[in-house]
Length: 343
Image (cartoon, rainbow, N blue to C red; front, side):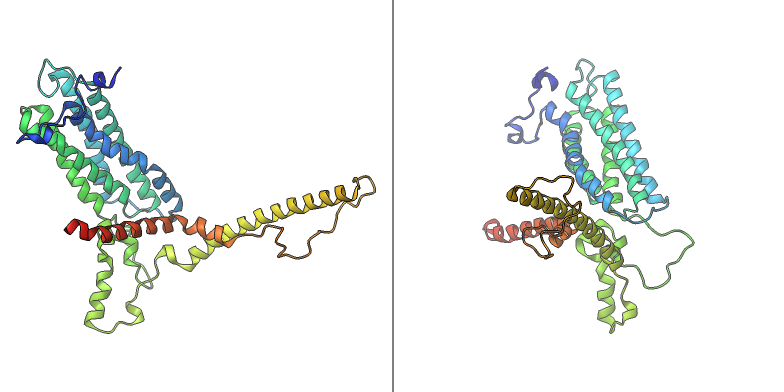
């Protein structure tokens, strides 16, 4: 099957799209764009999601209304996608009985349905792992809304009102609701329990929007503006930065690095012993001492490899460093391009 046959004898793009007063996209583009953006984003960020779950050490969160609604809408959207495909099969593609459904549309519906089910499962996994908010899933829903604008525009301008078009409107509305819901933070508190001691750092339960605009820091600034703050006004350190966690993680990596270095030193020293035997023309036999004194008495012998603290720090903070460096590079590029953009 060629790509043209896959798209139902329709090209993917037409250069004359924006030359008209009302843009008319090709059927192939309309059929595939709802799945290309969201599914592509999930595939590209899968490794980041798995890495983030491995680094998460917080406790599980209970069920609450926001989490249940998120998961329920994902399931509803998956059902709506399958039902839309079914109505197009029975009533004709886009309410036209003579038109056959292109393979691209069927594949796109299957992929987007699978992505909705996948996101519903991931939402519950995040709840079990104690993830307050996920920027990966929030951006996924932004992609769903942006990519859904093209089919929505085609339905409004060129498609007659029928069941499939109505289902498209309903799905788009639910997707917009999901963008709002996934921008909110899940409630980590347990009903009936109250924390004793210092208040928790607001960043640990802040939403994506709050982290993006640093709204979680606003209360302490408001307090500083009204009066002089004391140590009782300050919250506890963020769990990810507390010495209990940081020291334990670094100590674990350092112990592994020490064990690796010890094994390497043993192998290097044994190779030095063998080379010394060969150099003197001696061949180990029954009278050879079983344990030989190390040829290197100095622990800082440059010939022998020592454990590296740099490796441990890179394993512990390397991902965060690359993330911060990437944001810094984007910021610097935008500052450099600002005069050209304004010009």
